Length: 130
Image (cartoon, rainbow, N blue to C red; front, side, top):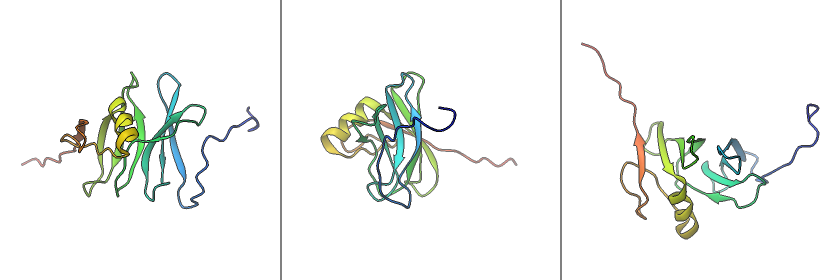
């Protein structure tokens, strides 16, 4: 509602330092990707639009966040500092959720992950002119 009433809380992360943030609706409106520090550092999670079915998609000691869905909803682009500088990564949702479900770890990078799920690393290149 325009007056701020009628809201629904979808997550409940009691960590006052960061909590859950940066929600991004999937193109079909059925899922929401978001950042959460519930495992100690920011990672990418996805849940159903009603707040159920929370799944962790990334799991590492670095910051992962700012999830953005691809137009068809099959991939999520996100920012990470996992290699010491800020880069943009893309993960396949079906493979990431399967890896999260069965292994609770998925590390997208330019090589195949530990579990064979492919990922892509996009790195900016600075070129100086001579």
